[in-house]
Amino acid sequence: MINISAVSRSNSQIIKYPIITDKATRLLENNQYSFVVDRYSDKVNIKSAIESLFSVKVIKINTCRLPRKKKRVGKYIGWKPQYKKAIVTLSEGDVINLFTDS
Image (cartoon, rainbow, N blue to C red; front, side, top):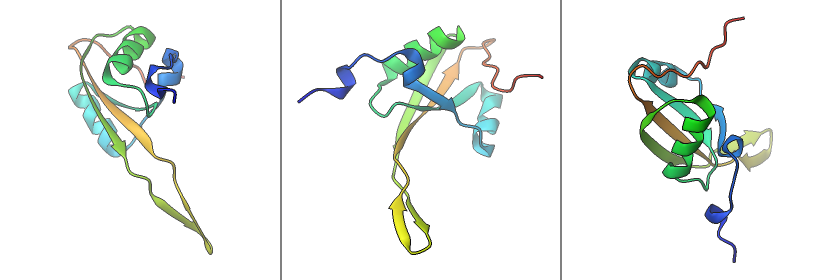
């Protein structure tokens, strides 16, 4: 049996995409950013990936694995995939620009 957490992943594979919801935009005021991350990555890997991708200093990381949700399309019932969310707190003065100015 292979341990999935021991498999090395690149930083772009650990951090999938940012979460942009009402709650996540409220957290931006506290210098906290939400990301969907790889399900098998731990806080140490997430911290190193964020610091190297965005050149910022991470203070704290909170993670949670959200439950699968049932999805119905007509008479067919399926499941949305389970994912892991990381809320990253940055040090004062560090900013990740999620919204680019065109």
